[in-house]
Amino acid sequence: MKLSLSLILLTLSTTSFAQAWKTLPKGVRILGYRNVTTSTIKSNFDRFGSEASMSPEFKIDGELLNKITDGGVKGNLSDQLYRDLMVGEYKVDASASANVHGLGFGYGLTDSVMLYAEIAFYNFNSRSRIVRTKGNNYETLARSALNSSDPARQQLEYQLLQQNMVDVNERNIQHAITDYFGYKPVGDWQGQGYGDMETGVMIKTIDKGTWGLLLYPGVILPTGRQDDPDMLQDTAFGDGQYDFFGEVATGYVFNDRLSIGSTLRYTYQAPSTKSLRIPEEQNFPLSQRSGDFDVKYGDKISFMINAPYTISDWFSIIPFYRFMYQNSATYDSPYTEANGFLEYNSDKMEHSVQLTTSLSSIQPFLKKKFPLPAQINMNLVQVVGGRNVPKMGRFELELRMVF
Image 1 (cartoon, rainbow, N blue to C red):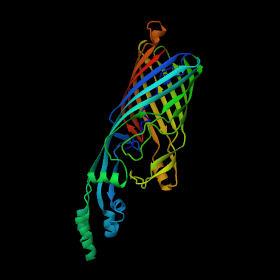
Image 2 (tube, helix red, strand yellow):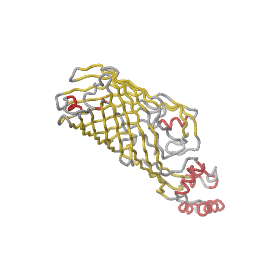
Image 3 (cartoon, rainbow, N blue to C red):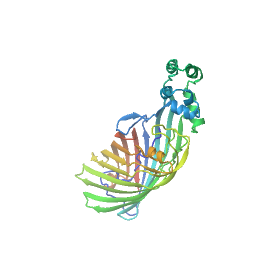
């Protein structure tokens, strides 16, 4: 149910469109603002690339019940009845949405070197409800207990299953989550806060007029809200460690109407120490204990290609394709088995498409037909495939002003 928002792209830099190698002239500034509104997020792409509900499912069987009751079940049931016991199956019905404000600023240090920085402010809402999907099998097992060859055992098991076993409903599960496992109550959550800040230097290395090359080294600072390990329905706005990236941008101008641009970025995520819940089972999300882990999130590769088509000096249409892959994370701690549980299925991949309509006064300004160089972009973005990422659409309104 935890949702990473690091895939909500907030890049406001001038490398977004065709002449991706261009930088600002010396002394010129660019100010960018972007508002991102996501659709309601109810599903994700699982490790097989198939769409699946993002609501976690779990069951309470004899083994888990025995842990919760400190061994009060296993000794009173035969091995067969203990293995077959089912208290119930449940899921946390979850959905989420986000509204994000991003601000970017660039400054031309020289005609070929530009300083750039950006940060985002998140407004996140999640809705979580515990829903029972399957009831207990006490009655069935009680009838089976009557077939026991040991009359004393038969009576003990029958009485336990018929009279002493509690029917665990949603309210009982909420109490177990808070009282036994020590989590905060499952419910609706609203969070606000800053994301991680990106800053770096864009260096125009080649400019041949119709094509060129730009290098963009930089760092991502851990200014964003981190995940609360004691809450199931919150989300982090940042990874909590320094990231270092290098990006290459290039493009080609075919004619006055059609061009192409692309970027390729590699991000190294530095190791950090985090306090996390210590998982005891691969597919069970709850744990009583917490511990410190040395975490190295997987490095990321991001690729973008677009093909702007200019209808007039004022208006353009730009289709995009974006790809992201993040390698698996590694965990190091004294909890060897838990390390493997956390590392399992931790890689990510995303394919998304975008259509941008752009209204720009930059060309009219250069032709002395308009007093201010500015740009308004409206972006429709849809995640169309991937692995371990949320399936969502988003609408983005972007404003840029050069001065």
